[in-house]
Length: 282
View 1 (tube, one colour):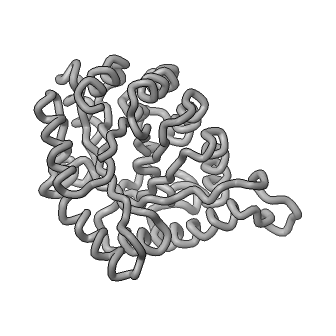
View 2 (tube, one colour; view 1 turned 135 degrees about the vertical axis):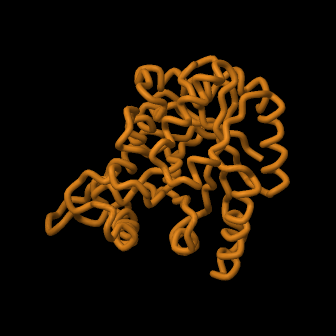
């Protein structure tokens, strides 16, 4: 199983200038992927900005949005943003997509929570068309440079519709930072949906796990603050790993479940957390 690490872009009041340094340290430490957390209504750094900073600061590590709330964005604009980040990275980005569950995340007129599922369906087609170089509107110009790649999709979420989008559009599924006993059914459902849709092989399965190995009390407070307005079943079960034993336990549990990659998401912005985690997990 691969071991990735999150960027602290949604730690409350994060120091934005620390993100490129975090990314460089993560690549040097040998992590497989750098991942971002997507929110608008929180005092952090946008996942697109954080991913762009990481793309410019690194050369080999994978990049993942885990997850970006795509229906909150105008589809054509997000398509160009993602293409640019992927281009800067040299083709290392995977777009992890969620649909969102909090009304305050949806701030663009015409892009509120109502109808977000249908809007995402249309936007997924827009992304593909934009990256294919089709002209914008009725004009002669595409929105992206020639040779732009079709960025792969992963999908997060707990509904049958999320899995349906995964098998039609994506390469796999992202599980949330919940106890393994709660995420295991979602991974099995993703595999089953993949088989029933006739997709070849198996979906890529990624799981998110929060950690704080230095200042654990601040980490715990940050997680509680981040999930204060989240749906109760998520807020009450968000797990924070704070010791070598619990990090190793998570790796063992998700290896046994057949998960392909575990992303340890930081609960603080302390740069030393990268080394602490690497000493255990890489």
